[in-house]
Length: 147
Image (cartoon, rainbow, N blue to C red; front, top):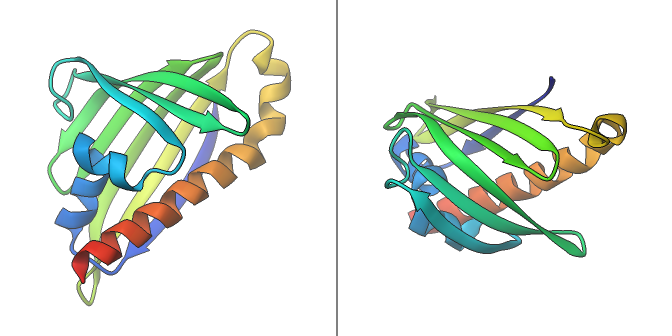
């Protein structure tokens, strides 16, 4: 299983950053290339609930179903997903960063299935770019809400 580690510091309290990542209504305001977001089961972000998101990926769209696997308010959030040959597990760890700022450490584990297993490793830089774009949008949204 491959791994990507990312970190984001935001000039806002942990509670604002946590809500922006975990609240279904809020996610739709900041996530770039999000085309559709729907509840599949339960009430996200409760553990065991699931949701489906469709995003633009280049010229195509990709739909993925996620299950919430961890939720500890203002501390931890994790989801597991599967779509189009990729099994993912993403965890977020939130903490204060000093001076009223907050930080989230993100770890994404992913495994390419089937034929994707051959070309998947070559796509790691592209995946990192998409995630970086998400984080920049998240930071802009949260810091803009603080004003």
